[in-house]
Image (cartoon, rainbow, N blue to C red; front, side):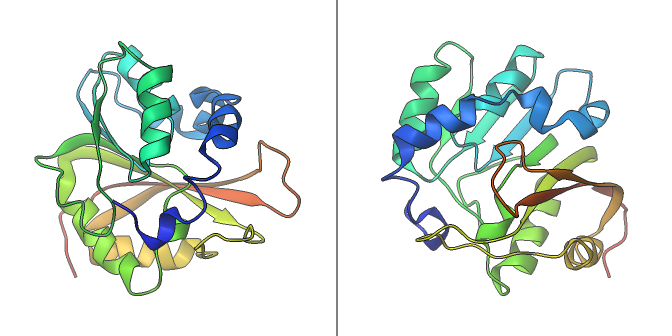
Length: 200
């Protein structure tokens, strides 16, 4: 399922697979590890890439559905994490039409920046609907220069928090961190949300 947000990823999949797997899930999610449910449950990893985080969560006992629209990255994920018990789907935001049910953890690492201004509110509503009543959504925002050939936006944290509130989600964590791959000018924000019970 090719979308604007996947531009450039297929052609660079071999290089990207090595880059993604050079980091551990604990490094990338270090500031929100305490928010990941300890009890095994249903996890949705949106934009799973090579499945680094999906595999780490599967090792914790979770039933993980990994959504990745770039076939070359999905192929690397299946190869690198064969036997991890991950369910792979070819799907994409903002609709995630192939995803069914609700999840105890919804994860979006380096994904949100690929959605444009019109897509983001729609995607947030869809994600809110996929979150279980006691669930947690973890989302990272990329800030800094856009690599050549990519469909990417520098999205502000306050915009994302406001859209989440409109979709019935409450922000419970916000932190910023340096780019772990050392790319000049790049930094990240991690946000965590839980259902608030209110939809404005």
